[in-house]
Amino acid sequence: MNVFEDTLKRIDEIGKKGGFKEEEIAVFKEPKKVIEKKLSVDGKEYQAYRVQYNDARGPTKGGIRYHPNVTLDEVKALSLWMSLKCAVVGIPFGGAKGGIALNVKEMTPEEVEKVSRAFIQAIHEDIGPEKDIPAPDGYTTPQVMAWMMDEYEKIKGKHIPGVITGKPIELGGSKGRGFSTAMGGAYVLRQLLQKKGMYPEETKIAIQGFGNAGMHLARILQDWDYKIIAVSDSKGGIHAENGLDIFKVIKHKKDKGTVVGAEGKEVTNKEILELECDVLVPAALENQITDKNADKIKAKIILELANGPTTPEADKILASKGVIVLPDILANAGGVTVSYFEWVQNNMGYYWDEEEVLNKLDRIMIKAFEDVDKVVEDRKFTYRDAAYVLAMQRIIDAEKLRGRL
Image (cartoon, rainbow, N blue to C red; front, side, top):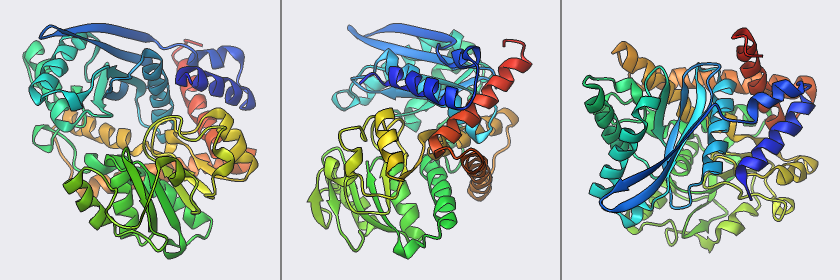
């Protein structure tokens, strides 16, 4: 599946449903700027991309992912989602994304550092705290962000911490950033569950993907007394009807490199999507819920912690079954929101404690949920349609005020 074509199709359908004119929908059809670079490092070549999609609401913002299968179309889709995501939560950024086709599992830390620095050397004129602010994504870490910031500062000859977010705390990172994607998702989910009268002890949750976001979400929700009945990673999953001990699972994952064998019975990543549960959380990769398996989903609610886990065809099937989907552009916007906080703190040279960061995140995510929920109630839209229409309207308004439309 071409994830960018899927996204454009969705934009077209939702745009028409939202009553936007053709020229307004056209704003979302092409990125503002596409940067493609070949990085030569120690005799090897790496294909690299940075896409700046829309900057009507502010400098572009978005992560950099390291993955052997990174493609330009994937980076375009991710940068478009980032534009919408920032608009949904009301932070003053446009959307961007970057990617390098490489496999960090087959590289030494020294090799990863060299490629990271080479990337900044290649794109330094196109980024900056008032232009485009990169951040971490798949297989990029605070350490990678530290190397990138350091390389940028070397080139510019001065300290500019606001050029990159997701940095280590010691180099200007924000407290709470490491688990902010999960925290934002948890705040949004809690709002919906409270609205539906679903109590924590009675709510069964399955999480596909036990990377940073999925693991932290499981930990947070267990702390709030929700029952996590299944989790999985790339090697497989585990299921216990009466609930897993997430702290035991986290320790097993750290010791063994997988959740498999921690406790419960083994399940596959495919099976975890189809379990009997109240809430399903796809927290892994794109295109996990498709027209092939959507009719087998038994969850009442889907919280999209991953980017693009549900295809447009699957959306229609889920809607017909009455399944509520909290879309990625709302559900996983906690990461970019705390990245925004980091950028603000860097720019003013004044830093907040974790409690202040989380309180600010809580307020922004609840307000975003309420804004989307109001569109759902007023226009009888799905949560995805409502979130898209809200975000598109905010971007179109900014384009018009600038005189571009």
